[in-house]
Structures are given as structure tokens and as C-alpha cells.
Image 1: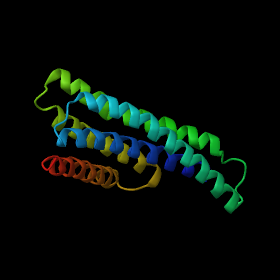
Image 2: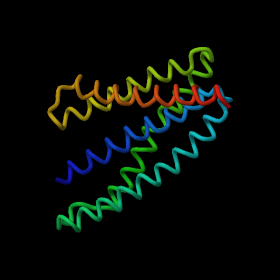
Image 3: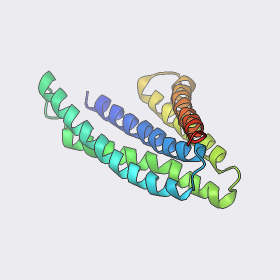
Length: 165
């Protein structure tokens, strides 16, 4: 039970960190705002959402522990901290990749970051498959698919809205 909760916490924090921060990048790129906003909003969102996710994990694990009368092996504080760390570590990946791509080639920075994010989501899914006994490429593919769809939606919605503003 304890390993299951930690796996869920790491996966949720990691996937949400990657997708949330890349959606910020996608929205700003789609609306053709200055790339400096990516850094400002990316860092602000990274920290605010990591705190929110960590707190949410703490509260939900504490409630689940009381509801299910779980043993003391489940620690809400530890889960909250793991959620926070997972969100920050994985959420930092798209920001770092974007700014590395910006330094290397400003023309393709978004596409390069998008591809790197998809690869990161795929890898995270394959790691998950080691614990869930899913087929590695299916697990990785699902992560990649819904992360890719969410990001393209953010990009296209911001592009559409910015055309009217």
C-alpha cells in the first residue's frame, strides 16, 4: 500500500509538473508574447502549483488515512513533500529545455521543447510500467498522448484568443 501511494504521488506530481509548465510555455508561444513571460510565469507557476499540489496531497492522504483507518506507514507530510519535489523536478524540465533551445536555435525552440516534453512524458510512463506491469510502450504512449493533446490545446486556444485581442 505504501509503495502504491508513493508511486501515485511521484507520477501525479511529475506528469502534472511537466504538463502544467509546458502549458504555460504553449500558451505564451501560441499568443506570440515575449518569451521573457515564460520565465516569469513559468517560475511563479512552478512554485505556486508545487505548493498547491504538495498541500493537496497532504490533505488528501491525511483524509484517506483517517477514512480507511490506515496504519502509520502512510505519512501525509512525507507524501506532500514528495509531491512538491516531484512537481518541481519534472516541471523544471520544460523550462530548462525551452531556454536551452532558445540559446541554440530561436526559430525552433517551441517545437524542440515540445518534442523533448513528449519524450520526457514517454520515459516517465515507461518507468511507471516497471511497477504496474503494463507494457512499457503503451504506458509511455498514454503519458505522451494526453500530455501532447493538453499542450497543443493550450497553444491553439491561446493563438485563437490572441487573434481577437
